[in-house]
Every structure is written in C-alpha cells, then in structure tokens.
Image 1 (tube, rainbow, N blue to C red):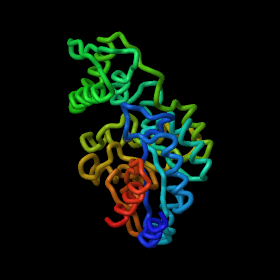
Image 2: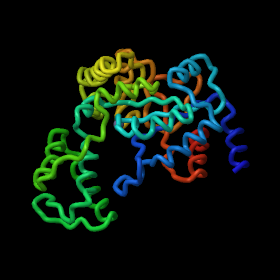
Image 3: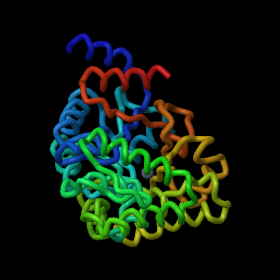
Length: 309
Ligand SMILES: [Zn+2]
C-alpha cells in the first residue's frame, strides 16, 4: 500500500486537477445496477481522498486553474443527474470527510418522473414479478443475469428512438403489465434546496437531458439557460457550474454548445472525456473520469492513468 501511495505522490506532484464523476450512491448493492457505488465503497473513496488528496470545490478549482496555483493532488467530486441518494446517502459521507462536491441536476426529473433508463431497469427489478409482457409476448424474468440481459435488450431497442417514441415505449411496458412506477429516484425542488443548504454546490445539467449537439442553437440555449433559472429559484443561490448531458466533446456537444454555456453565465462546465485539467485549459470543457472500480488498486490505477494522459 505504501509503495502505491509513493507512486501517487510522485505522479500527482504537479498542478493538475482530477474531477471524479459519480451518478448514484446506493444504500445497498443493486443487482440491476452493479456499476453504481454503494455507501461502503463511496465511504472508502472519500476516506482515501480526504487522506491522500486535496479535495477542493469547483469554484476554488476554477480560480486555481486561472492563476496557475492548482494544489498538489487537487481533486473535485461531482455527481450527475440529481439522484435522491446524493442527499440521503452520499451527503452524510461527504460531510464526514469534509469533501466538497457538486451535484448537476436535470430539472425535468425533479417533479417525480424518473429518467427513462431507470424506469426500464426498475421494471425488470421488481422481485414480485416472475413474468413480464414485453411487446405482446409473455417473457419469464428468471435470475438477475437474465433480468439484466432482458433489460439491456429493451434499453438498446428504446435508446435510438426519437424521445417522444422512447418515452411512450417505456410507458407502454408499464401499461401492458399494469404496473406503477416505484418511489421517485430523483430529488424534488425541496430536496435540492436541502442539499444546497448542506454546502453541496448545485449545478445545471439541462432541463430534459437531451444530446445538445442534435438540437438547434435556440433549443440548446433554452435547455442550458432554463435549468439555471429553475435551480436558482429553488435554491436561492447562483448556479455557476454546468455538466453536458452524456458529455463527450464532438459526439454530444460542439464548440457552439460551449459558447452557449458561457453565454448563459456559467463559470465552469464539465465533459465526460477522460483526463485532468491544468493552467491554460478551457474552464468550460473540464475533463473528468469515473472511479467505478471496487478495489483500491484499480481506483488508484485509474487516477494515475488519467494523470498520464
Ligand atoms: Zn446525465
């Protein structure tokens, strides 16, 4: 363990900022979402960060990048989408280790409607069900492997449909099986305000979570600006940070998108392309990466790899 830390110390010596991406922090392992961290895993991630890195807020990080004063082993923690477990599970752990964080919220999902992919996963997760009617055929759900496979088939079938057809397709699955949605997974406006009051920064992530690149300039600006307006009215605080949905530069957003985010008044914006940030980098295209591995070595390995790029 000590030699790993020694290697980290030498690699992380110079003026680079790492930004971690999380989505959910689950109270318990979810067999339909094996890639999401649990509270236990997140706890040791934060413990490791507080001991061996310099966790800072995105506002601090932006100033340091501009002034070429990024501290050694500087790290920011971010969450995408606005899951309720960011408040109920992640926030107490962040507070325990005094790690600042930013949660990017897509505001259309703050009124009780879950994201379409979660609705599909939850349908196949329902332990009371042995069968589902899928596209007019009764299908046996079987074990978790099979449930994951069936859910994946539906996700792939629906993913490339136009948004209205995709949402209608998900609703059709619920209607055909006479099922209601489980409890909302996303924070409502009161819960977003509550999280903001603990000191966690709330950032924008559009209204409807579209791929911005495929929208017109006007539609993009509406998505980017309107979520800022909503979040500022809910939290009573300025919203300074933005995360591009899906977030791969070139694939999901263009230079026009970046300009619109600046124009809307955001101080920073993050992509999902892997890497670190340093003096001279564009504050509206900060790179991130995912520390989803469950072993300490892999977690360190990913941090180191992202530093070397
Ligand atoms: Zn997202």
